[in-house]
Length: 364
Image (cartoon, rainbow, N blue to C red; front, top):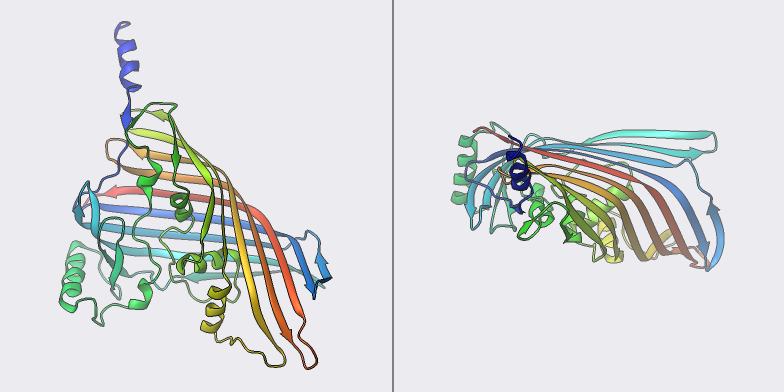
């Protein structure tokens, strides 16, 4: 027995190839929990270049918790086991927010729970691998293989123009989380390191895309990021993500991530369009404000742990623990009866973001 132990140890440390594959008929349940906490640390306002208001670090705090559960049924695969059609049931999807704002009489806390209008609905995604798009949404009903076949048949029959699906719900949805971009190319050993695409990690911070939550009474930084991501306003990504294979056995590989990156963009035109969608016109009438410029920056730094099913060739879980920073600078003209001063605002908040995504394969 003593002579066998070295050979067993050697077998467990041989180079391993980590791949992601799907099979037709696969049913996978994905659960998502994301919690972000942000505190306002800087607030400055000036008129025509003269500072008029400056706010020191305060107790103003925002907490946002996203909970969602998806059930995916793979209908078709192409190439190396990548889905070209899948049916997703949005079992649950909701956001709970808590905002604490300091006032003259003390801090006031406002809470609300927003449910996605997708909750309880089925969405059929089709297309080439890696580019799946929602083509049909049901109004709810049984989440069975028959339901999947029925949606596919309806989709083919109506050529994506029928009335059985709410097309508005499909905008901004993402069918696939970019799991495969976290994996190394080729075989690796314990201790091996590789670079990970920053954009892939960024996509995990908005899992599933824009999930069509009910209108909120306020526009928080996290919701703004969701809107900007949906409209593809995020134009710059700078930083790096490094992965290390820290442990591997016959069943599970553990990959540790070192994360540091920034997202930024000039989102002036996007916000003008957003304000128009809310019914806010860009006018020069007395008593109105005219947006001149707006830019933002989200920064993330921290660690992550990815658990991978080696034999099942699928993710088990991803956990991220990040420190965050949000900076927003805007400029507007305030139109009064006698003049139009330029107002500049600068807001900066800091906080944390914790994400846990778990996936299990279910029997059909």
